[in-house]
Every structure is written in C-alpha cells, then in structure tokens.
Image (tube, rainbow, N blue to C red):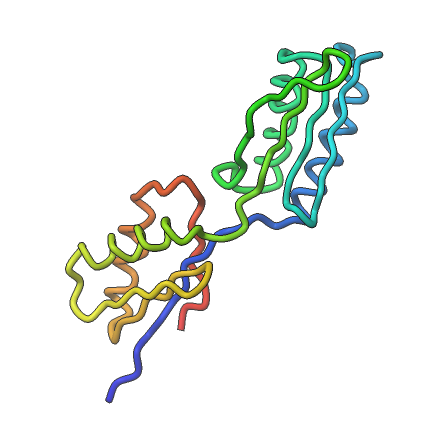
Length: 166
C-alpha cells in the first residue's frame, strides 16, 4: 500500500514579532507631535494575545491604529489575523479598544475549509479537522499542490499557513 502524503493547514501570529511591533509603535507615538501631552496608551497582553489601546478620542484611536498596523505589516504579522473590537467609552471621557490576535483556526472555519476541499472533487484527497488545524492527505503530491493553490484563492478571513508537508 502506498504511503499518503500530508500537510497541515494552520494559522497564527508570531507573538514575538507582535511584541516588537507594539514596542516600535509606542516609540513612534511618543515622539509624534500630535500626541504630545495626550493620553495614548498601548498595552500588549501576550497571554491573552490581545492589544489594548486607551486614548483621548476616536481620531487619536484611528491614528494609533494606523501606526500600529503599519508596524505589524512591516514585521510580517498577518493583518487578517488582527481583529479590532468595538471602541468603548472609558473614564474621564476617554476611549478604549481591544484588538485580538487569531492564533488558531476556529472549528466552523475548519469545517468550511474541509467542505471546500471535498467539494472540489479531487481524487483520493481527504481533509480532517484536528483540533485547531486541518490535515489534508492524498497519495499524490500533485493533488496536494492543487489543493494549496485552490485554498490560496479563497478568503476565510484569516491567513492560512501550510506546514508539515510530508
């Protein structure tokens, strides 16, 4: 019996690169003229994979987001995995926002990916949801390459990473 070739579909952000991007953004914000003497607090919680922004108003919030997103892009952090929460009023007429980082494929998105692969009618290609990843297997490496190409053309709202190619 022939051995099946496999690869895993995962997602996530390099948390060290996020930490570096937040530190760079803090440094840039502290030196900008339009933020002199204004509340502009950016905190990174690595354990929760979240970034909290606390600032004076909506305009400053958008300015901080522009600086932060530019730093994330420069550090190759997938911006598709960064989700901005709603802006909430805070004490003293200030505003807060939590930004979450997607570190795993959610079960419903994993099922959509597996269903998409099955709907493509590849010969002997199987997709299995395994926790926060999707494992795709087939006896043919060429078909696996076709699956990767097809998945890159789809949009699931997150960046897909293809690894453990065996």
